[in-house]
Image (cartoon, rainbow, N blue to C red; front, side, top):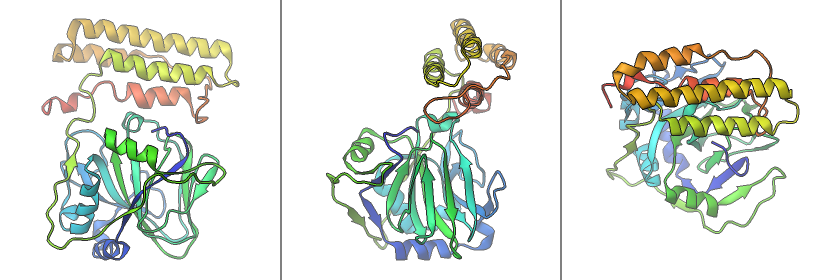
Length: 321
């Protein structure tokens, strides 16, 4: 999700010793390799599709057995009183890195990732845009995942963060607006809210809210329009794009959204329409030209594919809906 600045530290602090105890209680078998095979990157699913060991963004999310046996991590999550999507413990081995990337798919359009460092040290640096921070153990951070970002662990110790995905309620975003902001020059504005320490409470039972509806069965034409118009305006704002190529791609985008609305008028979410929606998705002829977005320097074409084409139809969710 795009933010007004690269990093925001939220005013919540957690018991690092207790968090560390629960993290270190996991065995090597609990840690799974990164889905893209990045060296030294591992994870333990805490909230996942059906509470199983997977990396899916879509479908009913449930707590995993690993989270069920971690009472303080449960209390940490519940303290936000938010609805959570896919969430994990994320490990980064000594001397390893998370390669630079941008989060451009549909999941990230309306979601932010909360980071709570558990095992870390000052040689672990998080880069976003043209700035970087060290997130200290027990602190709470969010960042602009739309911009290019990466992580470097230059130390001889493994790093572990608790990472939690959420769209955030009105209360959450009010807290963000009132929190400490860190801008590109590493300066600070005075926070209008004080840090709040959330301790471990022995025997405290909590309820964790998890996403049940997080992707459309058939995306509504209004959402298709909004997602495409955002890409169009961002692409127009990049001074390096060749005008003729940009216009040709715009025509492809507008033709797609008009055709989608036509099909919706006939079928809505009815199964009778699914083959027609699928045919339309596969019929899109994307040009091979290079077109960039002004806001993050990423590919406009790749963003359209990830955010719209790959997310507009999710027939696997039919039973749930």
